Image (cartoon, rainbow, N blue to C red; front, side, top):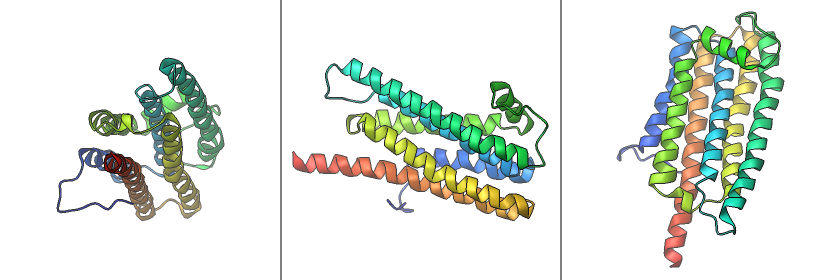
Length: 223
């Protein structure tokens, strides 16, 4: 993993990532969040990552011909994968967790838009969600477009990287959440859960962009 040199200014995308991920910590102490809203927000963040991955596909610099057809097919396949993973995660994680948690309002037993909107309203998740949208959007703008990562990555690498990053963050968070429910979800352990998620997200972010930076350096040396 690329280490953070504290003697140098942090990359803007790292600052945005950390700020956005600190909001759930505030939610634990100011809004009384427990496991359920933290896991829901993580699930929605995976949906955000998948959505930006689809947008990135449109900017991939492909050598295949015709470019538009390759991008269209890749977009369709990746879009179906993102939708399937999000729906499966919602059915197998969010709804069972909703059934076991005691601090949630009585809502529908189906994963619908209405259900999601009610959860967002009840737990005041709109601001944290918008912060995550802005954070990942800024990362795409700064790293992918301004710094030219779209010239050094393939659509296959994009989809694999997004899936790997989402699973590395979400799976440990879900496992930790299930462990905390029988312990009555103490704030101290919820803090550990959120901070661990921030660390995993930061680590995944740095690894992802370090690999692209390494590919850029290798390409420049081979010229």
